[in-house]
Length: 214
Image 1: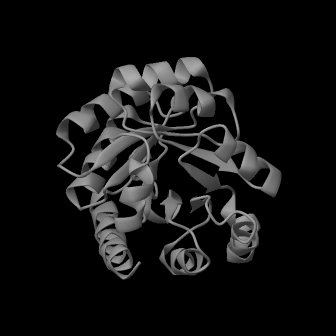
Image 2: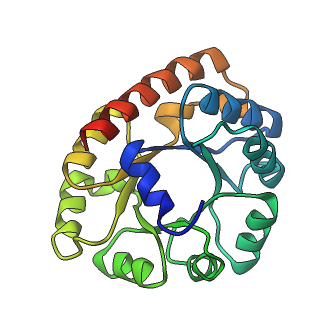
């Protein structure tokens, strides 16, 4: 995945799954289910045990057109480690050194921001996408307000976003949404993979329809 491609993928499939677990094996299994069921963007947070190994394994088995990256990326060293693991993109929780480091390496980055100042700083530092986080604290109204002065910034809403909320964020101008609990649930910590499979199918179907209508 190269610069600009993260935004392109979100335009056609506006869902990024967020895998944040307490078990390395369960996180790997959850990631595989998500990819099998048609989720095209899977983020494994670096707070997950053996996250880099999980990213490498998922990347090797990912189908064509699907991408695996790292979340909770903070430092230059984190970016280097993700690159060595073969990660396709990085996601940060805030405007941190990793944003500029990813830009220097040509790795697509979704950088966390909440205010107008943070959003502009993230974009200026080289973020491909600005992750509005936590989106639920401001809702689609905040996203629309940010889009008015920054029409060229690609926003992704993350935090407390389910299918019904996702529609509202896309209507307000988001290019996509990042979804953790409402999609992954507890599967990355040993929860039911069958239940995850059902949720993944629903989100993948919604993403396909939303991407076609955008």
